Length: 309
Image 1: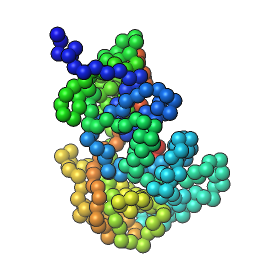
Image 2 (image 1 turned 60 degrees about the vertical axis):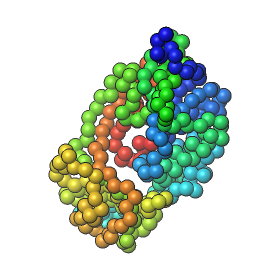
Image 3 (image 1 turned 135 degrees about the vertical axis):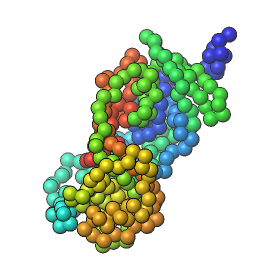
Image 4 (image 1 turned 90 degrees about the vertical axis):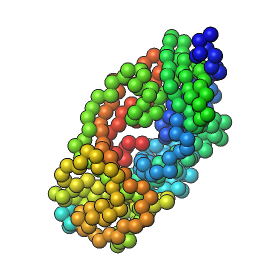
């Protein structure tokens, strides 16, 4: 007998790979319509890092239909005010509430940790009777005219064969599903390196306002958060970063803010520090047979504008 034939076997209508916002939403929308599904994620636990932090009005409108929008709003911070500084001079104060937006019950940008967004979605999914299986990794899969055969590996190392009618790859920018299907992911990296920090700031800034500090030396953005940290800083500076540069330190961020910010800041209590490179890439197709890709597995781009999640 072949080793694969001796593995435990199971069946499901849809196998969702990846329990980020896209995978959780997909599984919830299937479950509420009575479609049998399983959702797996290879991470042992949901990340507590803030990561994406903006939810747009249209996303909240869709969550309203799911009955979870107001709960997410309660966990976040809304803002309609932005102040850019150019060359250390305050350029303008923008009050988005003055533009007369009245065609949505959520006329604001919601600043909320992706961890909180995922928490709300996962709790909703569990209320529908579906639980995220962790850590479960998709090893391989093959499709035919009737469905997909997938092999999974569980926490204790045992493997399982799953027969699904469809597979949805919502497993991120390094998607195993996308790689296996052979879809292209054409695009390029943006030239700048960015650093971010979720932390606390002692300063005179408004806690409900976005700040942008623009100069020839670089860019510093300050976003309000609701959660373990009160602010996120994102910065880039003119000049090349060594390819082996690790994550930034609090001291490096303090030097950056002193150099780029027109408002004095004292940084402390960092919750997350990271250095990253942005890409713009997209697949040539969202579907191959009975396999789909979605979310970051299908397209990645700059987070400017808060459309990434």
